[in-house]
Picture 1: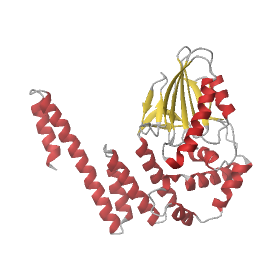
Picture 2: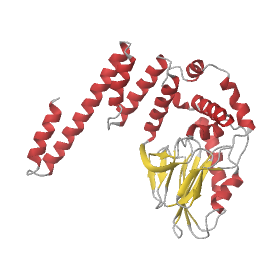
Picture 3: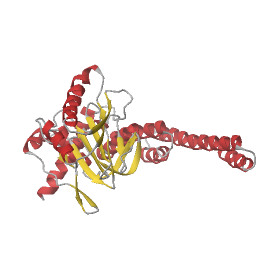
Picture 4: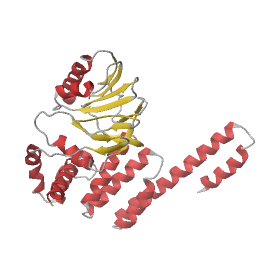
Length: 328
């Protein structure tokens, strides 16, 4: 652990010896933090192998706080495996989903989540979306009014509702950025279809300044549009996520075309999640998942415990719990 002490020694020298020493001080501190994280990660793995699950989780919790993204995701992956092994399936799912989010970018604390097949329009707030994949996200800024908007369009989103989303903005120039689509062979057809649907709706609107970032391998999986209309790549929205998995289930288990769903209601300066209505068709589609024991379902869909972020299990169980709570 000489690195920590080395940092303070270098820091004392840096105050009067130029930027080189200051840069070395920063490097020493980053190295020390990384070593601490790696040390905690190694401890966690050893505890897990020894069957000390609780001690392993505590060590890995420390490792996942590392500023090194790769170390954070490795720690979360191990934590998911440990929880799977001891039958704590809800916590395993949470760690798996956290891992998936971390792979997409950093948390953006002021941004509200817009889920798949949802849209939101507001002023003075930040909006964001994630897990874009073969979907197309539409980010809009109306400079004259300061309004921003975000929609996450998937293969079953009705084209007319995309046009209706754009029509909610007042006349004048719209700055529109479209992001998403997967150029891999097996997903290319769906991606192109989604893009064409979005483009028809966007280009039907007069006075559009369009930035097209679709079907680009470099496009982000998650991003935020700020209240000033700035796109921040690789950013995860963390507000409005209380019913995230229930809202996600509405898309995952929908098998027929449906309009974009409004994610939030604005009441003055207050933003509230819009009312959730669960279609009977969605309940029918998800009901088979309710009949399988949770642990068996988890193992069937994610046998290694590392791809729990497929979300299917989590969304099915979240929807089941939500339906039961509403019925009470």
